Image (cartoon, rainbow, N blue to C red; front, side, top):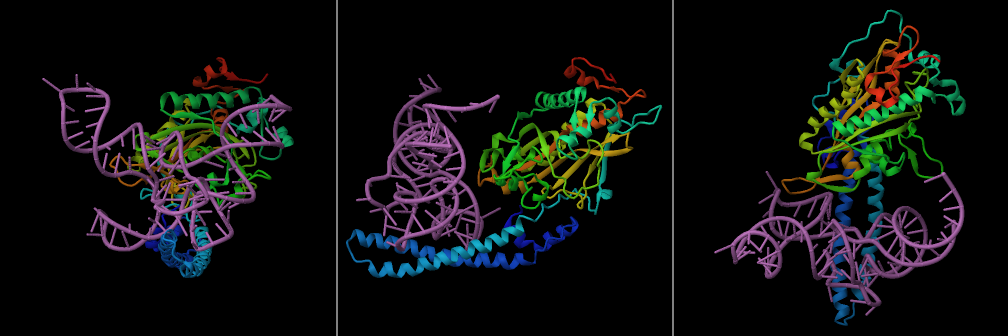
Length: 425
RNA sequence: GGAGAGAUGGCCGAGUCGGCUGAAGGCGCUCGCCUGCUAAGCGAGUAUGUGGGUAAACUGCAUCGAGGGUUCGAAUCCCUCUCUCUCCGCCA
């Protein structure tokens, strides 16, 4: 959420920002609603002031055993007016916030301007594409052939976009989760947390999933709870409505959770394989940072995510998302795209963002600056470290052998009792 | 699921038959004084949001789990909800 005062004073900037983000939100009602709200507040607060003063007077008179009948009668009317105005304020405020909650975050100055994916700017790459003496195949063929991924049974058990992992497939997924969590906690200073996989509406609003993206969420029937689409939601909300001490910043958390997404609007896209599932596993990195150094923290966060791919020896590239491709809550986002030789494409495997104050304002997460003075909103950041299912995809496709077997990356072998290869039984 | 107790400022904890309680008292913390170190002592200060005001002084409004109600006036009375604790039952 942006600061009301900021929107009020920079309405043109905000409108231009919306255009740059391909966002068609209509701001025309904002100005009138905002002005009406201020006017109503002014009125009602004056009346309340009157009432407070008079109430004290009545109390005094009563203590002096004087008759306050006239004052009480007069205040009766004032109170009635206050009640009416309060109701009106609430009404106007609701309308106003309906708009404000739908305004996305302001992009950082280093974000390239552009309309789509094609305009994202290249940052760097690491490693190189593996060479094959044969034609590499996509992971779904490898997985089915090795009997470690069972798409048909996943669909039978639940439906499309659900997959049953078997045997070394399941173990590989589990090994990756453990490897990632260990690396981030032991080497990068993150604290591991295991949060609830369902959250309430307020938490979803705090990180920006609601109200705009309700269609993408699985809602629990009969309760106002939602399955999390990412650990970002429960972990960022750890400090919801709290004031942190400056000494607690920056604060790093990592969490493994399954993620549940409806993938509304993606019908027909990536229907084969593990790429786009309704349920997938992810190890997430979340940071709470001092606004002064949140962009340094973003670079470090990105490096932490990259280190996993490097340890697995997977070729990837990093892109800086352009204004048109940037997520709703983010000020700046780097995507890490891993090379998938079976499909001949780079696919997003991690998304690392700085949200600046946007989520902190919604979730009301503040800190006391060391210089003293008023509390300020922290900056929140997060990134995948990494999406586990897509990492399995990358491993299968990059390390496939001509005979259909797959070499297990060395760093994972300790997590698999020394296994070096997945081959057909 | 049943029975009961509770939710007050950074923490602990008062709030009597509704009014002088944004909130006593204590602890903690900050600044100053004092004391040759440590400890103790003394004085002052110490919530958040939002508005006015010169980014000051000062000042309006709101906030005692959340929402509603009664009243001129609610931390205090009534209703609903949420959460916490204790006991019983059930359960991985």
